[in-house]
Image (spheres, rainbow, N blue to C red):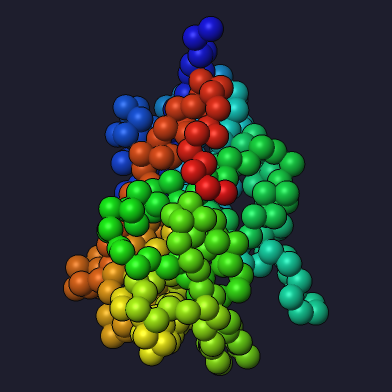
Length: 318
């Protein structure tokens, strides 16, 4: 029985338009028109410049800082609901506040759960995202979550490198499951970096678990922020006798001195996706950062959601 195509439209938030245009082009769809009115005090109001009545509406916006990006998405979801959209799918290539997935000390918020509550309250019917910092965040929602994996893009890239003495590595114990999944699929060994932090974004000490001597190491992580952990892990791998160190990270937050830190480190190559835009000036100067687009993957999944088809074929590894 042929798939039934729902009438759908794709719209973009301000921060992720660069990616939304690629997704729309890859899916053969036109990107819908959205206008954002801005007031002198900083307040803003997005509006759909075409009808969405009875439509399956996809709204694409990564929620990296500032929080205006998240709030713009919430306003767009609310506007679509009030304009009688049939169903609303929030597409968050990067789900911000995902590091706040639990209470790791007294008197702190669980930011990821709060964001989930706000999106649900605004009126989303479905969430589509990639490489959540913690898988259990899917359970924070009372609506379906399509959780995509960048491994669909990174695994073919790693295979094309043709590294003879490949070993996968996790830059911290939290990434052990991910690194192990890559290692199993590629049929190689894995190593783990054990780190201790006294304050956020600052690694105090680190040790390597596993033999990396004479190996071509590929570190794998869901995001790279200040790049402190990643570069320290790479330098330590080289000190332990590794031939080379590369890294694949889905979300290039790259805050502070991250670009400079990567250039000065032992990392040969850092492969990232385009869920978050790179700093154009710094990225052009970088000789180590390579970007792989998630647009074709999101375009295909958006198409499958609109035709009610399975998306499980995209899950090479979980």
